[in-house]
Length: 546
Ligand code: NAP
Image (cartoon, rainbow, N blue to C red):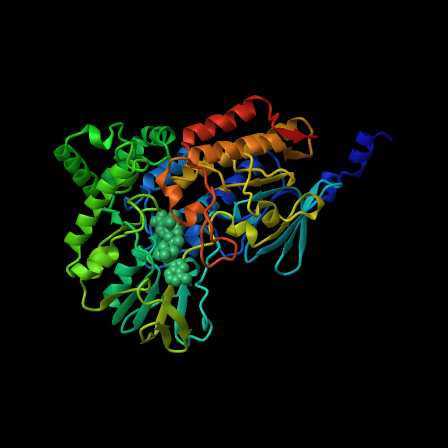
């Protein structure tokens, strides 16, 4: 037997594998990937750790959780019937509505029969001779398939502060990203919120309404701007529905797939009066316009960014009664828009309530959690409830928590240590037949728009393999190097890449994630799609196939 014949004799036939494709996660990307691969005639199995579908919108059911992309720009766009039958009731839908929408999606396309719930994947190992993946679940069961799709999401591995006494607290404790399904009441309770990121900023005003007392422990403040949510009535929904083609076309054309478009003018090309009027208008409009639809230079030019930051700081000072509290809430270590901008509804006004207190832990660090509350360098605090709004081991965290091994038993986590590299954010050389949805180095932005593209790209790749009777796909090393260099180039000059945040791969609560890396792709979605479309049009020659 020659080498090729010998190799093909060792390849485990599809009939001897449990499935053709295993997908990890039943969020937006996992469910859409299941649907499209099923339509290719593949035998697909999804494993989901939760008891229901929805991913992010299943886990993040904390009070106040809602979209900050416009609802009608966020839903799936590929199915006219789905667009026709689903009515959004708010411009920025609250979590329960989104969870209902994703359940409707699962029912409509009969997805549940291929999703196994309460099934956390603990390991995924590649067999190079047999050309298949074996996944191990928490219950010890093993499942094999030719292909593996990771749909674990970029923000799915919640992290807690590394503080002594974390398990000692005798009251109620919740993480925003692991919020329980049962009703949580704040009424008459002394509540602590640790963290002031996008999740906390949504939860704080709601908790403040009923808690007896709320203490917010803030490390670094964020620049937050008003969401300006509004209800959508039947007539408005009809108008939106008529505009769907135009809305999705716009999302295809903008840099980050939001409906907001960068203003082509430079900050200093307009008069100070025009600039002020433009920023006032953006601040008064719904959604991300002030971040994603601002002058073209505000996220790259220090002077422009400083002026815009001054404008938003003025707004914070106007909205917060106590000048000392206002100063604490104004970021001093980074400019506006250089970290993810939380969108808020009366967040700053919450600090005007007599039952809300802000503690800067830059001034008085938390030393430990105690059985009755927590201790800072200054004093002990007593609480009935602690809410950890402390974020996620982002981008790679969901994958890092799986013992994921490619060729020669190399662990993905080790492969990426100090060298995060991918091919179009979807593949990693040495990890054949594994495809990541919303992995590192993919275009994120208005995420379902990016998901639809990414899922369809992987579907096309697998259809190509099916058509050519191929059982192996591994990104070529040079292709990985080219893409990773392109991602690094796109990160140059962006002020956001000079700031610690989950977007630059920093999480002080996770070992080995204390230094900034180029963790995400920051070019435009259009450039991303051009690259991927070219790869497909050229017959996937950047991927070694056999
Ligand atoms: P986050 O933005 O990472 O915020 C975590 C917060 O916890 C930060 O204020 C952080 O302070 C603080 N923190 C972390 N560890 C701490 C510690 N040991 N001690 C004290 N404070 C600590 O996380 P998130 O708010 O969950 O949001 C994550 C991302 O999810 C967002 O950026 C966004 O992309 C997404 N999200 C989206 C929506 C939406 O679409 N509507 C809503 C919520 C979240 P430092 O800043 O000092 O680290």
